[in-house]
Image (cartoon, rainbow, N blue to C red; front, side, top):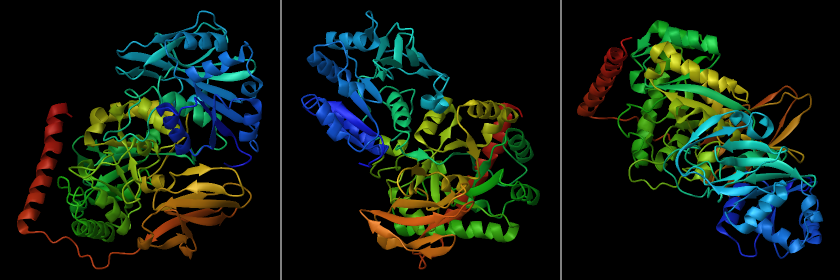
Length: 581
């Protein structure tokens, strides 16, 4: 525990429950210092001892547990140690007499009740009057799917602040009792973020036990909680060659749109196409001042080419992809973002390790779990993280399609994730009308997006934690850009997960090699950034010098060519006929 910071006090029963374990995992995820207090131990002396050295504490507890504590007090007034809390978060209101009595006692509403939520779909409303807690989700109306919420609180109190309202009552509400701020969450259980998952996280399906607790923790422990340095954003369009027009994508139109709406787009470029470019289109990308850029999209873009398990095969494909992108740069003077977007989203755990060994900064992907028969170790905690670093300790940033819904982009923003939008040429149908409407909705949210080219965005997507002599910086991508806008030197302590230290050659700061230490599977280095200065921090790995480019048979190369031409025929004519553009 860090002295001088806020601390969470987890009030629980004498027997540890699954919800207690789940809640402690969430606290650890956000690196919030916490301690436990059982009902038997609950008294002023124990609380004072547990919270010593911390300026304030907040209590998190279930409704049955708090009901038992107050029942033992034999008084309507809150115990002194409860009243000393900065805030109290209560969840798990069951439809039982003790929970009903508790709800009426702490809200001051003699008719308050816990009501089982309608199991069907429901539309909920997030308040726009509490942006400090709700952030980019402020003011949203969200259509939850069946089972996404499990209960509602019916409270009639003029002083009540409804944070998330539903037709049956409140899913999340705040109020004051005896000078203490209470936050009542109707969720019956807390999310188990250790749960394995093969699909992206969707608040429309998993609202209860997730959204209210995240909102609360990011607000109540904002002085110690991991936070994002900024919310970087980028639109990523897969597959188009650098031609004036591809399918429904017109590069001139796209550039006009980026000017009008002030956003950045990175084209996920297939290296196989490096010879097949239009000089004027390449010049437009090169001269766009960061509004347009290109990154690496596979190699040949064959099905599952980076879902392979063979390290030798993966290294050869990556060597081929890099040589082709280098040839593109040598012939057109167009540089590329050192980021991989996997074709069809398919990857293997070994592909992540191969990307690291071959000098890539990060991967950005729509799929969150390895393809085919590779073991899936992805958890909800990985999806809540800025990037997945589960595989080979290499960062895989997630991206979303716009049909995932604005609420999921907003929740990602609360979590501190970057805003990466995925699409293909058909995202520009109707001259980009649907995209335009979505980007305007993004711009209307309570956040400040910083639109950047893809590699620039991932390098600025890291977590920071203030307090102490140095700012703690959790590095995700293999490169980190830190800027100091202050008038004094800022010292940052950079940590990065790297269990395979034998593959690490070293770290550079502004191209100079620096010393670092390795402890418990993480590397750490201290960097002083002068006033108005910046630090470009990079991981350097031992190169795969003995790897030669892919050398495939004529039959394979012919198959790749046929696949590419058929894909272009589909995109250029199939969609044009369908949408009559």
